[in-house]
Image 1 (cartoon, rainbow, N blue to C red):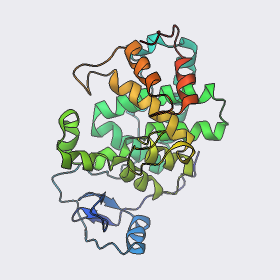
Image 2: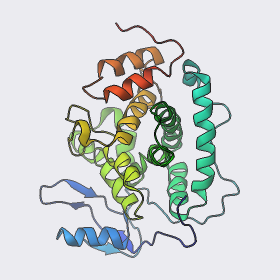
Image 3: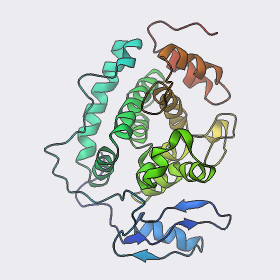
Length: 295
């Protein structure tokens, strides 16, 4: 893993207001913890900002710096996995779970990654559980793709932290995901950029940063936050994109009328080559014990 001899993240202050670019697009929300690296980025782009020594915002769940004593750590894959995984090849799911348990143990001993996991687990239980599910599926797909050990580690960490940017969004936005106003939706669509900027402050490998930044991009374009397409999208992000949408549309937490695994895989296959990378879809489908027929 990465060097953990000294804490890697140093919070200089907290944003006293929302920060937008010259086009009015939200870059960072009020109360966001700021590091020297993030401040330098704003200065380089000549974007004005004001800092506060304390996070006085009532609108965000701030990402705090936690200690590294995790004797009561929740950082492990639950022994009883999500029922939806019964539809997958059991060996693939169990191998992915074992790999993630080892990785989570290493991550909790890294000061920056451990803090990020702690923020997720103490922020919203639903987001943390979703992240675990997405990571299991992402690892299973990545192993089918026969990625190198380095790439496998990067896609795994990226999957676990893909929603870290949500921890800096106003709570009301997260509560209204299924019925957001236009303004709330614009704000929500910044969570990949916010999360990636937060991780970039620690100079993590590019594959992790891009996974978080691009996991809502679409293969044929039209995704967010940048609308890039095809080979411009990092393959890690393509993997997490499929795993993310499968877990989301099959979870009652996120929508009232959730889909069955069979219905979800059919929807994903319809999006093959449009929303999702064709190879990733094929490998994902191959994880199922019995592949449901298309409509």
